[in-house]
Length: 150
Image 1 (tube, helix red, strand yellow):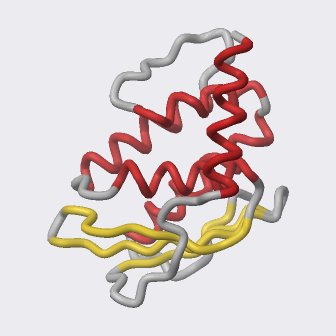
Image 2 (cartoon, rainbow, N blue to C red; image 1 turned 180 degrees about the horizontal axis):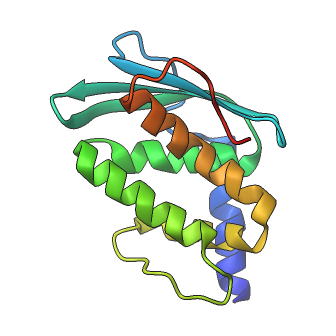
């Protein structure tokens, strides 16, 4: 258990200090902003779609280590995915981080996202981890209002 906790901390810190796909996107076909007033996380997710496939995805913003790491990992995993694959991955991720700490949620197909299972032990941090995903979903739905965790 200590090894998993250490790996969780290392990965979160790595993606927070060196976020992947952290830049704006002039050619974005979709974008949305998200805000978590409890933690102060602010994120903008940019998407470039090719029919029903995420051709490119990036983000900008500032946030806590969990939010930034979640956004960074999300952009890595969604690159090249279809919209239905992205939606399914979000559903599995949400189930993972919102499950009871004593449960063993299905982790199939989650890849690096499995490391965020530790977030469920800190309910207030669930919003930090899921904000980028809700923001990505809002971008796909062309929502113009800022996504909020409240």
